[in-house]
Image (cartoon, rainbow, N blue to C red; front, side, top):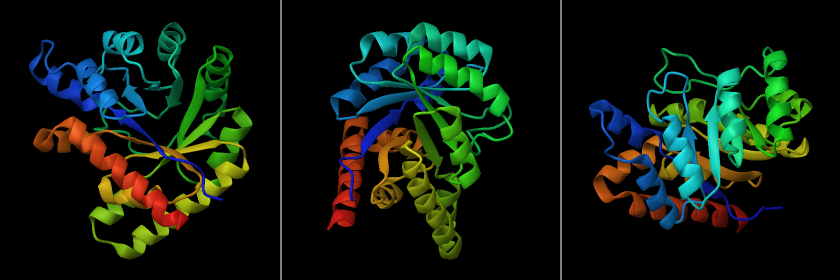
Length: 252
């Protein structure tokens, strides 16, 4: 049975990347978050990295205080980030792997191997009323471990599929999409809410929105890049139309 509308979470990290390249306060990621909300974004996502390369602590506090949309805080499972999340109380916290040398998140959490580290963070966040999401590969072991840990949500890493699409490798893309479809189905069977993100553009978002289990897509880099040409509100409206179109096609 096809679920309802797929929500769009807009990641504003790279507005802060542009700001930080020059220093100062412009462009203001909170202003762009407000524009995104006004254009129809269902939520705002921001990754507070340990090295503060883009989003800063004050950005998170202002988004929480000033933006009338759910805040999804992406964060590493560290004591520092846990303390910040417990102070800010975002609507959701998505635990992601983080390496200082990476340009962007390169894959899903090792939920099985890092269970001892993740368990107390999931417990503390959940106890504080924060919905916990784990950013994972669409693999059975990771999904089973996420459910065992008590996470409410998994966000499936779509990067490998999107990379195959960009490379024109149809065979690999088909295999990766099959993994995502199977992972989404398994996650739903385990009682997990299913989100997806990383590397999505209009076409890939439209396709993955057709998976019945998908409740939310979190998209950032592509939207901010397109916004340089046509503006963020137009980009968000076009993305939401693509997502809705994908849902309708699958339901037909």
